[in-house]
Length: 311
Image 1 (cartoon, rainbow, N blue to C red):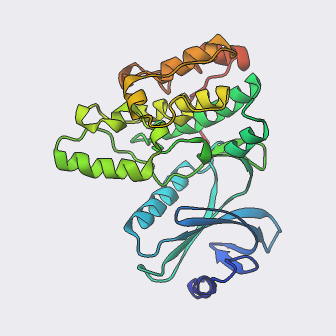
Image 2 (image 1 turned 60 degrees about the horizontal axis):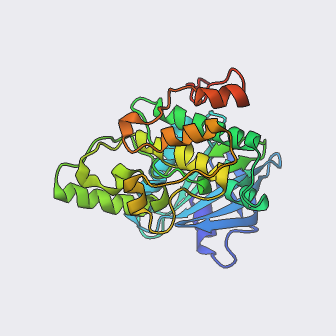
């Protein structure tokens, strides 16, 4: 298998389209290039044995310590969360080449038909209240299962770009390379400087919680940062209003808690946004709360937003 993958990697002209690649028990033909991002390229592939379509994430590790660490974190996190309906499914993994400059990783994933960003663009950022609730509820359940792990896992890079519409019509969360079970504060200047560089590389400014901007405040960073960020705070705002609550040079806005909520959505959505985008991590609406129960009861009677999930 390694020799087959190595030969594929060495033939870079035209990417992998048209090639046959074996990833675990799957032997697939690459039939389309879907997109690029960071160290990775995404392709659509078809399984030779049954014709099922999947996504292939090709990661160029290229001796990059960060790339290998992100890949390992993504693989282990997706294995740990496998089976949840709102987590993108990892089918198989393969590596090509020796560890070092030429190593490549291949992740075979379930195929998705759309991204949240594209879905909203096609609708000019105007979603129905039902759509807002369905997407928000789906991703909150994915975040909940992460926070209910032992130890709890934080996604750390929750944003619209990491939310996809599965071919089965379910909204799923993806891209777990920044996931972490670490929580706490940084007690020395050296530790703060290292953490600031990591946060700069692996998070998006408009989605950072206040405690991630000001590490010298010694406010502990934990899964409550996810509650501020896209899935449960910024995400709901973005779904409701088609824009982010903090724009431009957003650091001061975030640190001061400066945002406004436009009219036009149910009061319950506004209340939940404010509960999630609270400056004090300990005062934020928690993952175990009912789905801002008024929102859940009106939009989906009897449901809970963040109930733990069992396979």
